[in-house]
Image (cartoon, rainbow, N blue to C red; front, top):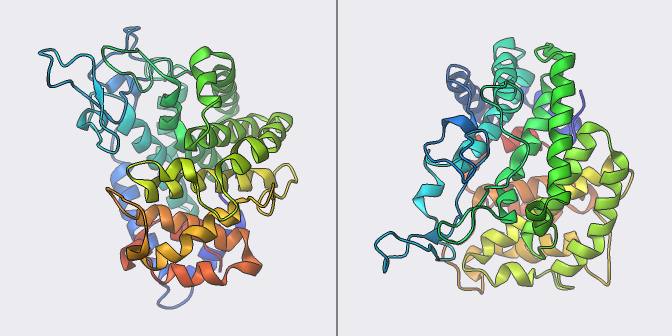
Length: 379
């Protein structure tokens, strides 16, 4: 089983934990299986199902709108759209565009893949494979491997590099392919086709003007860009590219974004700074994991006193006591994001994890039902 983001040891820990009487992991497993039972009966997601069309007119082209861009109330036609940072335009979350659809697709794959792993019931693996073929391979429903029309702003631009933030969860698809491998529900031609899709997508990311414009972003967009290119490269077998991205990112992303005291200045400038501070760390933690595949210890990498651990340690006291957060914030703490950061930190900093384990005790009880409890089980 080849996994790039998830860790088979953590999954095995969860399996072992589930055998214990009254294991709290049963809550997460019950919810996972319940969700998987619903998903396996539903039709797969596809980009061709959206109501609106991008400038190309091609339904196979991914299309999304700028998250914080709204119709101009001073213009009868609403154009050009205007920016309201931190306020999400509902059009970005309905079936008019592909934004929510691609998130559902990625989450759907992982939920079904994990359900197969933990139950051994092949129906979940079959449903995951059907979703993967629908989105990436089948001629009538596949997505073209580019985001030329991502995060469009009506009246201003037909697509932007920031659309790449929409594909940040594609790692879930990649690891689902590994999770369901033993079920033999994807054949050799499927895998070859998937490798080619992600290779083509990576080429577009770097060599197209729109894709490359995201590469130069200095904040969380740049970190998520690197995380995506890295896992894509690992998936289709280009470890050299993955290693180069990780090495360059130590200075370009980590040291440039995280102050010596752990503050992420560029994320703290936003209207929802707690969310963005956690959000950027999630991408850094993915890169830490991917670095393991190229024999590089990014977990403990330091440049000028700056490192990922400093960023995590800065936020931990505020996860434990959110009321102490000293910044103006429209949203406050996002608990599922905090959970992911803490669980992965326990794994990555096992010998220095006491403060993270303590902080996990402050996370709301509802998070015990989340599949992340199974994904990152430290044992």
